Length: 109
Length: 114
Image (cartoon, rainbow over all chains, first blue to last red; front, side):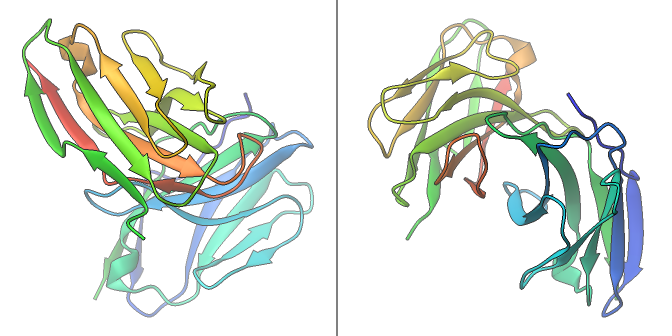
């Protein structure tokens, strides 16, 4: 299974952009890049996913490197509610999701 | 819409006891999943059901059984609980099968086995 590498933790100031990196050097051509986040004491919540092109939605943007060996989740203006563990997951067609330890994001007021 | 609901929210069992965790979704999704999350770790898939009437093993199925009762409900049973099964259990559902699609998660059941 292709694996992802994320920093254990990151800090951000409120209302500033946050760039959460993910390395996935062994990604295969059929792997989608998914991001979920988990707020304290809650179940995970879908954030965004993509295959090759950059993606935007109301929550975040996903920037995918041209060689697809890394990606970055971008929160444009962090709020205190964005404090969570963010998981970068590779998911091939008809395969299950394998969660790693994720990145714990702390947002400072 | 309630989304994905789970009962109970908390449970304490003694070693060897059995129990069933209940999960229901009201989004008419075909696929449902059971995960466990140990402290400080990511989620691991126990079992999934791609559609009503089918179930398949995930990454860590040992010690568990599941039933897809109907399209809405997917239960997880521990026949003889062990301390190693102390964890938080999450149920999820999605529109598509494992091929993709956003998974919606329930609030979790915190299980302690003494």
